[in-house]
Length: 102
Image 1 (tube, rainbow, N blue to C red):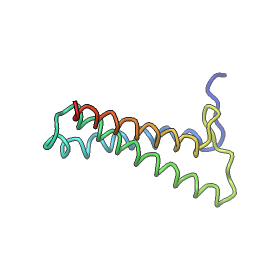
Image 2 (cartoon, rainbow, N blue to C red):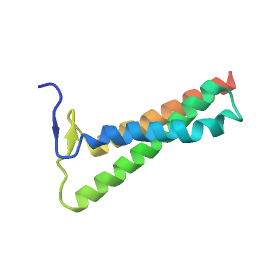
Image 3 (cartoon, rainbow, N blue to C red):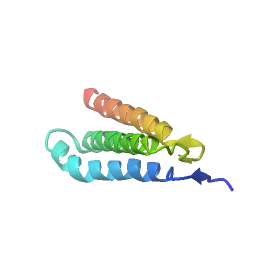
């Protein structure tokens, strides 16, 4: 089996993707008023991914307070998915800003 998970680790991906979807639907129209469309999409996705990573980090904190810390998906724990989400959000925001600078 290639995809392995334990506990609620599979929720990490849903939090990250849900955050990106919320950012795209909620922030893109607002950003598109002030900047070109492509930059607005990347920046909205960056903020949404950051939101999803922070929600995922909060869920991890809540579960570890209850004594459950064995939640993982594809060998990464919920904290690892949060850190990857924050790193990806930073990369998306940097790319969006580099598009506007050029």
